[in-house]
Image (cartoon, rainbow, N blue to C red):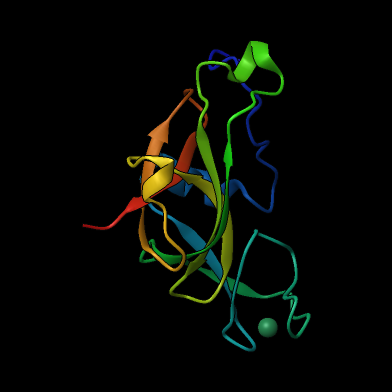
Length: 137
Ligand SMILES: [Zn+2]
């Protein structure tokens, strides 16, 4: 698999700048050159106006919790047994896009709807740094 021993996201030509940003501890978002709206995940056209031109801008990395689940049953057990319980969340970034990630740095019981979150970066291999979120204090 890889040295992290867990499935990891695969970089492609559309997302290469995004993953390079993560390695540099920057959360990069595409912004449409026509309608200015941010988009996520990285794509080769705007889902709002279908324009193909865009610029990359660094996100503030701040957002609010939209929804979450607490994973307590590891599937497959061989890969995730040591990680449970862990939190899978949908986070609405201030820029206006929704991102799926994990919340770390707090107990599952302390998660509340609409709580404010901040991105952090966790290097897991030489190639992949994961953007994760933790509660703001
Ligand atoms: Zn657009």
